Image 1 (cartoon, rainbow, N blue to C red):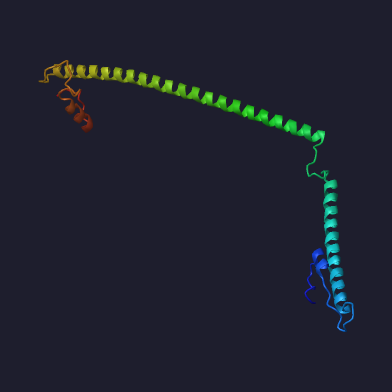
Image 2 (cartoon, rainbow, N blue to C red; image 1 turned 180 degrees about the vertical axis):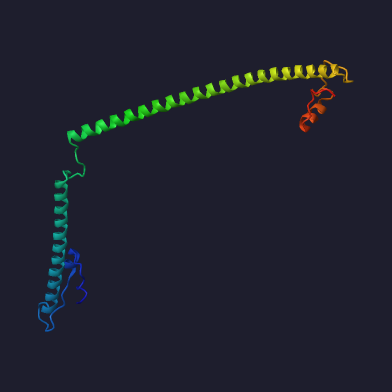
Length: 191
């Protein structure tokens, strides 16, 4: 085709087309160029008709789909009263669950704090009781050691009885008592 053989034909193309003068010097247009141009116009219009038919078919398909799904042309479907009611109930249920979860968490936190305080109080009380027991046991041991020292002195040991314990808390000769216990000898036997 000549320069009119483009696939797209615009109104400006039609207005600006010029046919050369006839070869024989007479007035008129060359028949083959006119026929080519008319074929181009017809082909362009047929293509536009096909595009238009495809577009209309797509529009109808979308319209039918919207009608089948109860969606209005604007693209926003108005919810039914049942849907509004269902949504409201779901929202209220969700809010109630959130409130309940907050209450349960607050209660669990308070319970945990209270339990922690109780445990700490019990631990402090036990520590105090154990301290008292340790003091009592220490005093009892000291008394027993003093009594043993007196018995040792009465049995004829040369060591004088001192009712005050040395700074390290051991009685004189106590290391011998430990040695005898380790070696299995009886410290209460007479020599």
